[in-house]
Structures are given as structure tokens and as C-alpha cells.
Length: 143
Image 1 (cartoon, helix red, strand yellow):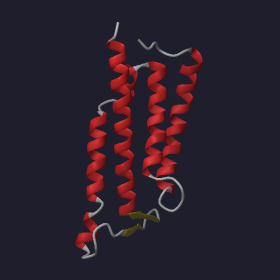
Image 2 (image 1 turned 90 degrees about the horizontal axis):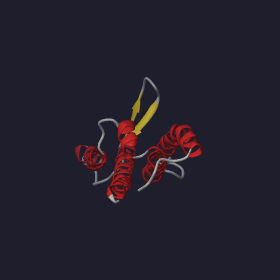
Image 3 (image 1 turned 90 degrees about the vertical axis):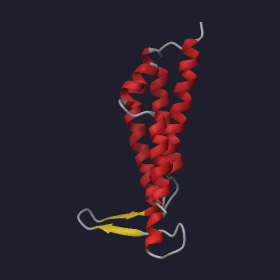
């Protein structure tokens, strides 16, 4: 059975988790034009939750996630991936052609590749968290 971490691991997890999550969001938004993107950002975010899970256990991590089940993250991510191809169909363009929109108030360029990357981010995050939690719960059940 895996015990909760030491004082050093608990303190490090508490401070590093928000930093890792912010860095994963940075990688997500940076990824279309430069290195980064949904996959690596999802892995960084999953690493943050895994560190927290190793330090505090499965029940504490479920409390941090609140009402979000990792399987729901996978489903929403897949849905966003599918939805990201629809705008090209409405414009009469080939499948997976990128569409861009400018949001005038904040001068932000939204795009279908960004929607797709967010879908990949959520799918990777949900997959890794789900696998690690399942492994930790199995380990907890063993004598």
C-alpha cells in the first residue's frame, strides 16, 4: 500500500501543482505557432495531479478534482476534437481546414486548431489521471 508522502513531498506538491498547471496552460496556448500544444500540455497537467496524488492519496486528489471524473474529461476532449472540424463544413471548405475568428474586445484570435488542442489536452489529462488513479486504488486494496 502506498502511504502519503513525506513533509518535503507534501510541501513540494502543494507549491508545484499550481505552477505546473499554469505552465500547462501556457504550453497549450503557445503550441499552435511554436513548440507545445495539447498533448504535451496535457501531460504536464497530468504530472501535476500525479504529484499531488502521490503526496496526498487518491481521496484528496478526488477532492481537488471535485465533481469532475477523468472519464468526463476524456469525453469532453473527444467531443471538442470532433466539433473542431464542423466550421470548415459550414464554410464549404475541405475537412479539417483551419478557421480563424478574432474576438474584438480582447483582440484574441480563436481558431479550430485551438479547439482541437484543448480537446487533446482534456483527453490526455483525463486518460493519464484515470490510469494513475486506477493503479493507486488497486494498490490501496492489496493487503
